[in-house]
Image 1 (cartoon, rainbow, N blue to C red):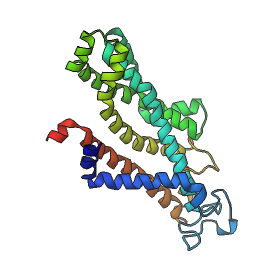
Image 2: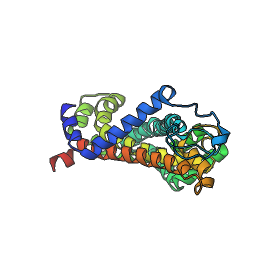
Image 3: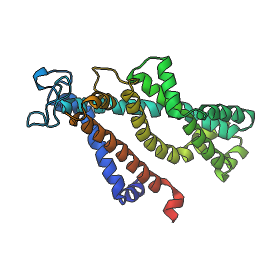
Length: 277
């Protein structure tokens, strides 16, 4: 861990990304304590008011404080992103391990199923799933998570195929170790680095996709505080109250950029070939 942190901390971009992610996570956790106002409280006389000392980011179309809604929305947005990648990991990683290690007919069936899912654009597939369920933030996260399964499966399968032929795995097979034990103790630990990197980068794309579904009206529903929904609410007032779209838009941009920077730093720190070069 000390060597990993030395390599990771040498990447300034990764440190900046980690700092931004840390701040956003703290804001999401402490929002009930540090938010200046109730995110649902309305002051109709201040509808679409610009920034002021009392309301640094201004007010929305219903006279709600944008800063408070942004703080509460951070929790909803990050939670949706975590749920999305969790679905991809919980389903995709075991499928990739099994397909890559056992091969044969099981691998063929698994990968053809993943190819069938990849035949549909991920965002379109998510829209179809949400339409079948019903529009909500949770269903939007589930839909994006399902669309992430093929990517995790293919990544883990490729890494497992490479690890399966390593000497330590062949040695474990030769002494009669069970397949489940070999996968858990020898294969999985050696495919974790690409999983960690891909998870971090997938968080960024998942947050963007969930916000996109909310913007289309298929994600979070009013009066919830969620960044994509805030963008949707502000599009009608972009001329007279630009802060309603600029603030959540910049927040989404920052969190996506931060996770991508952290993912790049993790990749450079964990990839042995990059370290040797």
